Amino acid sequence: MDKERKVLIQYLYHSGFALELEHYFVIFDYYESKSEKLPENIKQSIKERISSSKYPFVFASHSHHDHFSPDIFRWKAYNPNITYVLSNDIKENSHCTKDNAEINCAYMGPYEKKEINNICISTYGSTDAGVSFALDIEGIRIFHAGDLNWWHWADESTEEELKEAEHQFKSEVSRIEGKPIDIMFFPVDPRLGKHYWMGGAYMLETFRPSFFVPMHFAGDCYITEKFAKRMVHAGIPIAEIDFKGQIFEYIK
Picture 1: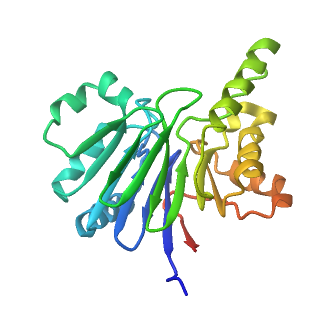
Picture 2: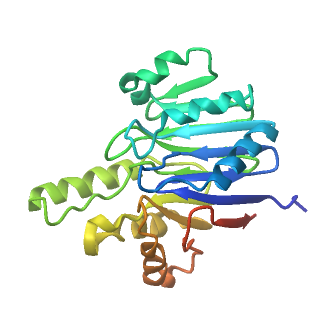
């Protein structure tokens, strides 16, 4: 019988999450806004887990301020083995990376593959900036979409623009391949109004991940419960997020 594998998933803020596995500690898209600071106990916990982890990894999907913070480079002081995997556009658009030449950092564009410390990393594109990430780590496949989404801005777009947005999204999604996805992080953005659910629903129906985690909603956590209720018919567990630091457990 295969060994049980467990992931602790901690919601940080917006599209930011910390994942704890047996041998790895992984952070995606760390960000805190001026008005939405992370509590100090969460920051201290991140510091301690980076310090104690054999393989700490930090991923950032693109250079937008709500997905990438220069603060992540301070974490090197906690563990010299920390590895940063960043979208190419961060290198191009952020002066702070030029001051951190000594860090262990891999830059990736769309449709690339790397293996680092036994993590298989594949990148896909986005319907905004940067990349989306697919990781195979300890036999668990994790997908973090970054800003890949069906951006259906109905009140701001022409019919032609809406059709093009749908085409771009579905075309990009069709490139995602490989084993079934265990944990999927994907935008469920309330700014899209009544169309907030469309991208998430498409991903649920297309990939049927074992666990779906909504993101990209800033402080509007209510949208996660709303989405979960709307998609209850899919029969897939969906994280209902209530507060920063909330932890979910995934067992495979």
